Structure formats: structure tokens, C-alpha cells
Image 1 (cartoon, helix red, strand yellow):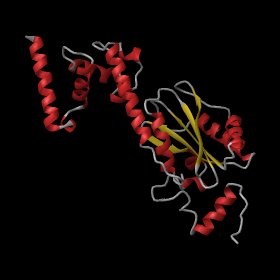
Image 2 (spheres, helix red, strand yellow; image 1 turned 120 degrees about the horizontal axis):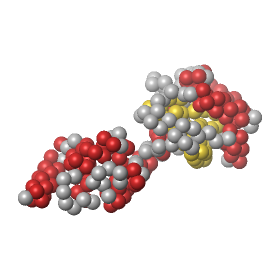
Image 3 (cartoon, helix red, strand yellow; image 1 turned 90 degrees about the vertical axis):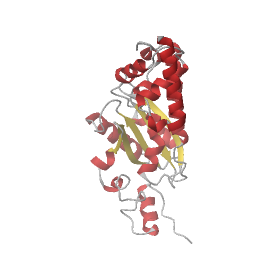
Image 4 (cartoon, helix red, strand yellow; image 1 turned 90 degrees about the horizontal axis):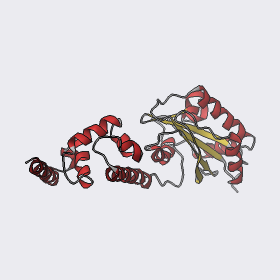
Length: 266
């Protein structure tokens, strides 16, 4: 009798999905239906609730490691693998949807490019973007991955790579897993160290982005102000719009900022 009840329930859920679509379902109901694929019999509703509670929501479920998932009652290795694959597909979808702008002239473009790499990250990671004189991306890499509290690559290594890549400017990013979008003293110290290391080679540090709790802040905007305030301001359409009245002025100031020669147009 119990088996028939569960089978009828599953069929009713499937028909409801076909008739009403995913929007008609709560998160735990969609997760319950997903588990039908790896748990052929039985009530998966309770398992779905337990997963969401024990792993602090859907993101925690989809990006938990296999061993942790298997500690939830009702979840076996098949279910854990399936959930891990779904999580990876979500991450790759986000990567595919990154902005493909030829010029990273706004804070938001850079943020949207880097942000997918922090989906499901449970440790601190430092990513580095390097640009040429026209703010075209010429290099992007994971500089360091550390513990849940700290991950700081050597500033000199970043500067030396920027020189090898002939970068004119650099942007760094890191995250606070399960933390707040508030810069710590070590965060600010690391920012200053990288900035000083780059200055030796006349390379500009555009920004240090901090991702946490669904937010992204710019450390240089908050603590240094001046030129870096523009990228994170809501009313600014372009990277330097707040500071430059016209394109000619912008080009000259940008050249000075990046340590370029101000070549006159013949």
C-alpha cells in the first residue's frame, strides 16, 4: 500500500509539473522530484527537506562534497554524484553567461566576469585579471586558493606575471566564504602591498573586489577613493565617466594613469 501511495504521489507531481511548470513548485519540491532519478522508490520529500536544512539551502546542497552529502539520511552515493553534477552544470552555465565585452571599462563588467568562479566556493580564492592599455583582458588566473579564512598570494608574483604579460593594469578579487562583504585589516594590507609592487613597474591596480554573502564591494573605492570611486557608483555608465568631461580628456588622463606616453594624433 505504501509503495502504491508513493508511486501515485510521484506521478501526480510529474503531471503537475507538466501542466503548471517549475514556478508552481517550492524549492524542496523540485529537489524532491530531482531525487526521483537516483532514488527509484520511497518518499524523497523528507530527504529533500533534510538536505536543505543540513546544508544551509540549495546552494549548499548543490556544491557540497560527496562525503558530506552522504551523511544526510536517505542520500547514497548515486544521489550525491547526481547533485554534484547538477551543481557543476549550474556553475558552467554561469561561466557561459559571463560578459564577453572586448573592453572591461566598468566595474560591473569585471564583477560579472569573475563572480561565477565563486559559485559554491568554500575556501578563499584570489583571482587576477590583467588588461592592456585599452582595458582588454589579456590574462585571467587563480592566483591562490587557501583556507576558509585566508588566501593571499605573494604580491611580487602578481607583479612579475603582470610584467611578463605586458599588462598596463591589474584587478584582483577574493571572497569571504560564509562571511560578510567587509574588508579586514589583512585584506587592506594585502591590497596596499600589491598596489606598491605593481607601481614599481608603472602598472596600475584598478580595483580589489571582495565577494561575500551575495555582494561585491570595491576595496579601493572604499579606502582609497579618488579614481577608483567611479566603477562602483550606480550613476556611472563607464569606468571614468565621473571624472572626464570628454573623450580627449579621458584618453590623456588614462594614459597618465597607466604610465603611458601621451602621443599626439598627427
